Length: 305
Image (cartoon, rainbow, N blue to C red; front, top):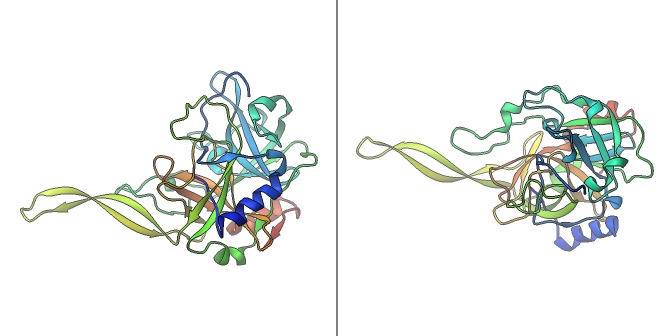
């Protein structure tokens, strides 16, 4: 799921100011649809590496470098299907490279994972009526690196008090990730960093399927379009049908908003989609977790309005 806020020109300027594979890839957990290639050396966006079922290393999720040794990402990128934390010794992070599979040898080892204790995968699915709602899954985690990333760009988290003004109706946000550029991409397509703009709207649309009784007492299923508030305490929804979006490989990656000077602030962490890519999705609200992140970052976390 991906895209931006304010005027498109402002966001694209912010990206331009900041930014100026192996023979085989493997399926990943999320990517960016409708995005354009970006220079990883100018953004705090990193690729998360793990081995596939055959032991081949590949980029499967995205993260944000917050300090030289701390990567912000999604909880679901840090655990297996049974919610058991991955063994850190099997993981790696590629920093400053737009095509991570070509830089696997330069990956930084991971020392430990810290998954938010309130993470609940059960809150990430669709409801019985088929709608995706903001149910505060606490889909957030950090990876501590074994050695510092030298001379890397670091992300700055948006201050909590700036959320309301940054996420106004009609605002565009910037998405970044190593995911698919098309919903029809092969899962073995080589990964490359991309960015895109997508709208944040105060209400987002969801198609539901509800069971109703007709005039003859028969139960029939009808589809309805409903509107749902797009911002809650720890999550928000961004994107819409036909707008840029994140997809497989983008999970855990950042959502940015520009400040008044065009500098990008981290406002979100890519969490989950709304079905197929290209219709919008759910993001963990990063500013809501500043108090949790601060002690883990040992005072090195950068926060700004």
